[in-house]
Length: 261
Image (cartoon, rainbow, N blue to C red):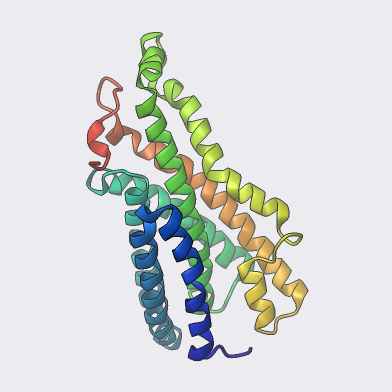
């Protein structure tokens, strides 16, 4: 693989002046968060590059599992925050749904499909779980944000369903449908164009690393299927797991679950 020197990376950071300039000109309110995200991305990736070097060397089942737990917790904190929900109120139900779906799909992919030796090999366990978790994070943000914001925005309609005798599960159904559509549509569009419009990251990385293209294709198919399953499952689970916290005994939405504006 061709090495990218630090001097070459500087070229890309100069290129960042283009989107940052456009943001400054047309949407200055997100300039600070955009700049901070670039800095955080850089620092986090450099630190994780150093950290993973030693994780791969030790290749301990306990260290690998500990790192996955840290990934899940960090992802869940991001989900609740980006969805505009209180982490204090919503952390437990959402981390449960995220953990179940991510570990289930990662387990199927690693234990039944890839089957590395040992099964906890960090070279497979951490990157594959990370890809599933990262996509589940994005779908959860979209699903939870759409679900609860729509119920809050259409409170009169929602209460009308309840007054007409609908149960909570019946009253939330149209909002759950909207949330799932919002969460999955972007990835469905991506799946439709994979191989025609773009080559996915995992496949591209394997090809650049010297793997035969068809071998890279098989891995990409496996990870895409597991990602899609995890996105759908975790979006639905997190909504249902959070209902007891989000609604009171009278099936009214609890405003305390939202972050203060």
